[in-house]
Image (cartoon, rainbow, N blue to C red):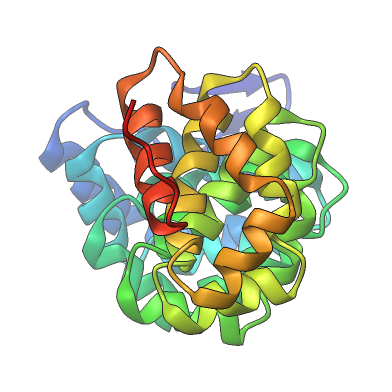
Length: 267
């Protein structure tokens, strides 16, 4: 980001040399000012902060630096902004940061789970998608699987699994697939009606959605009661459709789900 100005004067922006040291020094020096930006009522300033951190958080080394330098103190409050674009950018940044395993625990401990679950209820599909993606990443962490469920995250994720927006459904089902590795969550997802939209996703033309569906059904087909329900809801036919996928990973996951259901997959 460069300097910008007007007849009334210049605007102080977050600039730095494109190097690890340059970024680290700039964030340290500007941290308090950036926090002030984040708390500002000026949506333009909030967008500037969130967008910059979202872009930087794509890089693995930056993911560590941003959180170590208290970047979550900037981003988490931005999820509560009244501006939809600020919410999207903040959720996007958190989704990128949550790829890092250490960050997953830190984000949960600092209240990130509740804030992201709240964003799932946004009417904006882009906010929904980024929030679900962040929760999918956080759900990789063993402790977070339970925390997300206790915070009420399963129900809204199931709602988004029904979304007609493929990108939203992909991330929601990915999150449910990760949460289902936990035995209690596996049961709750089925009890809350999560199996039907997941099975329905097998009919999609989207290979990305099919991949998450196959993975989710594999994880959800371990519990005995779930097995019966998946069969009742047409899960076997859906999985047999996925087994014929040209994508090897989808085929493997669907095959394992069928084995869990006791279906003979031998040709």
